[in-house]
Length: 146
Image (cartoon, rainbow, N blue to C red; front, side, top):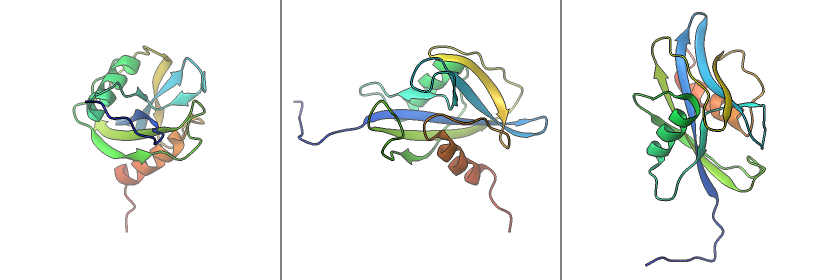
């Protein structure tokens, strides 16, 4: 039986923060968006969750579709759903992160027009609220030393 409710529901998306050690420090994988919104801008790999798709499976699928890469493990970073984060409407994103080793070259696919590694300390302007997601991941990845 399918239930219907009078309450509005957001669209559900996933975003992936993929980090690796580069020649000059930590690097993060970004894709250049090929379609609106934010066409031409850099963003985290990610996208919409299919109906009845587990969140981690959606993250793995989106990462592979947009970059050709597979992550050995993913850890849930958090949920991001502030109003206005996506001009297409109310969306909530569950972000995942992981670190990978080696010199891995992404290839752009699906709706990404480019994919490349960026120094974590020299990122371009990011689409959506991805700068907030990266900041939260960075706090975990590079904890403050006391």
